[in-house]
Length: 427
Image (cartoon, rainbow, N blue to C red; front, side, top):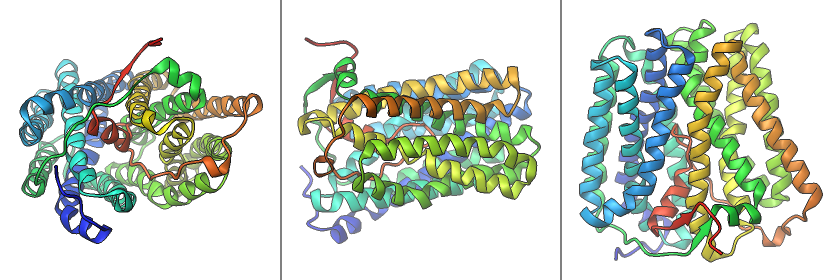
């Protein structure tokens, strides 16, 4: 077992290369999603086809998050990480070589599977470098690295024409280079342990609002990263402004993640979750007239939307944990990954079809509807059930949401202890 550093300074000293490698990986991850969505639109794919292609990534991501622990136990962390990096690096190049829907669907499935494995293996190492006193700070720093990497990755779209090969090659290079510091600094890998089981039905009985909110957040997050570039292109933004559009949402999250986390720790978490959900719906609606007013107004509106929408994942996790015993939390994290992933698979396909039928603005109308309905359900739950006392609420840890639409902190907790969960009631 790896000896964990005694304080945050020691944990950071032993983890800086991991964070550097992960930041480079996030540059590639942030660029590839936007690049593929823009390229699909330029190739004449319908919004429905683009949504189908992009949502396949989340199918692969779900499969990868479930299967990676088992594969890792058999062949080891280093081999898994190297193999998945090689496959994901090759997959992005295949998109540029063969521009057809079946090939892109297959490559997105492989990419999602591999990126889930890359996140899980790298973050299990990162988690193992910290003790209980330093873990929160280290994961918070990791969150900042993640968001900055994803945000800057959007800007790399301006370096070349999406119709050419250069940007695809750049993504491949970034993924390959990210492996170097991660593998050279990994040290002794962490150990997977057995844990308790929990069914989705049992979790829903314990915290229905937690699961409903997680599904909604998964839908909206995945939809934005999959279709946001398509929306930007279709309303007339050029490549530069499309990259700014996506970057604004990510950096809005960097600004508001901390304040929202503080609010969720100091006040009834249901009220905070409800308030932020409703404000997210309103922010989505504001994006519609903002687009007609000016590009600057649209960027401000989308920054506000992202700053409210993406931190909801952390609030959902914290709220769900408030209703669980400590020995149930890791199992619940795996279930939450599944629920959020199902939302991520559903959202891009459903919302893309609505865009084809009702036009571009239906994207934000649909997002507003999802969050509005979630807010109504949250109000209903507050009326029929008592809140968790403030002194019983567990402190929230900022959770990074990647373009995959999944909270990696949840996956990392899940895979670090190889939790299993069932789809039905075990009793």
